[in-house]
Image (cartoon, rainbow, N blue to C red):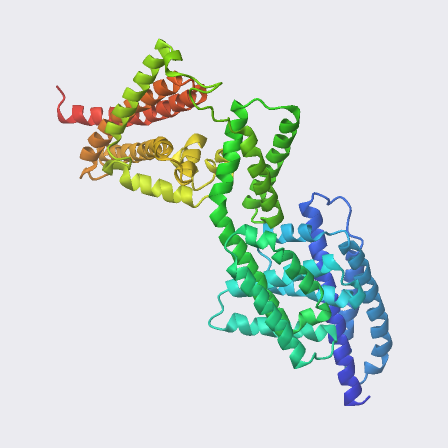
Length: 527
């Protein structure tokens, strides 16, 4: 056998090994997907066939010598046919995997390195002839290559190393298509078109710009129209840059909208409790609640879909005007004239105004008192790092927030402080947020004072700060009670209950530090 024939058999063996490896990786992905979905009862029908093929390929690798090469051609034909049949069977299984299922899997499990992602893309290239590249498979390959590009960017390999390796991977993918090199004019024309699309994404000032122009939909259709030219290294590199530009733009614009969206649906839920609804409105509210739950799950799993976000905003905008109570100016029909106000209402209003004045005087400007400024800053920073679309009840149980022992109402207060509400509303919410920071400071100071009393800590300024916090806690307890009474007078029973709960929480931490201060005083002066 000539050297040329032996070299051809070596290339044949390498090609079969690559196809086998790509099929095996895809098979492992299917197995992992079934395990995630709880379907492990039925064993894979492909495992035995893979084991048999692996044994044959290993045996052939040991026979690639001039003496035995003549007998390998027929064996390679048989192995090739079996690998092709196996890939075809796996491709049939792939038809059951929707693009969103594949995206969800890799967004949930982020420990797949670039080698696995590249093998999955190679599987599709080995499996699909040009007519088989329907929309779903193109979307799945597009997602996998984008994830591959993200992994290459994320991994620290030194200056330029990731880019060089990515270029090598892109070149290898193009080689698998078997397509002739397109003309330079065509490649440059496609790259210019992608540059324009990328510029359109970067110029978007709000989410409506992306949805009204259908920029994402048009971009997806453009990628589908490329055929296998999609895999040309220069074109695919431009596609990746454009994918990242759209992703970054959506994230940037969503961050601008996130607080407003969360505020809108929180307002709807508040109004729903106060306004009588009919059957049709109740059905729409039920659909809206389902959309909010899906929206919050997507936020937690980092798989936000622009279509879902747009639909949620549209529905919120249509519901708020129907739930908000109508304005009824005084003196008109349905209004209230001053001479119709009862003596009890006048007295209640006067009491509430007096309470407002006293509370504003005690607040002294609205910011946190200097004794708890540091605790307030830490608390606000921690809450600022949370996902604002997540339910407050979930936020208080997250690892970063749980140590602060917050109530869900205090998470709502943080969000409302940052919504741009009126001065009076912001003052009300900021009071609750400052009260939460005071509890944090009381807890920290109690722990520090315990160490001083046990002899394991340095007294330093802890005693003075403990006394100052006790005095501040006493003041805030009165102010909580003040606000609770004001809520009752205004017939806001839910607010009164929340304030009573928060006052009780503050009382517990205040009492703990007060007892420690009292114990410390007794040690200094036993009389």
